[in-house]
Length: 148
Image (cartoon, rainbow, N blue to C red; front, side):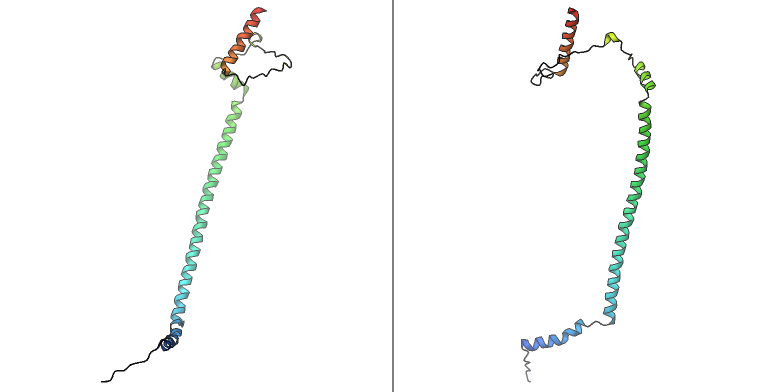
């Protein structure tokens, strides 16, 4: 029995693989058709994705236009209510309803300040609350009117 030794050196093995490689890279009709179908599917998916995005944006635009119309109606209604609230007859009737009445000349007080005294009108260093300062001004005016 003879033992057969094939001398397959790395160079010969590479030569054999190189000869078989074009067979794997060769495009026959079935592979070309498969590539065409895959490309067509990818293009269809891209087109469907874009159509979905456009449709979603269309629905959002319609919704925003409806909201804009609603806000314009609300604005018009508020402008009408504002105009009605500015009616002087209505203001006078509401004031009489809650017990307010017109002022008379003896109910009005004026504060007369001397012309440039060099004293600031508002004392920012004072820690006295605003309400107490007003009360002290009223008290001073009452005392001044009592002297006269």
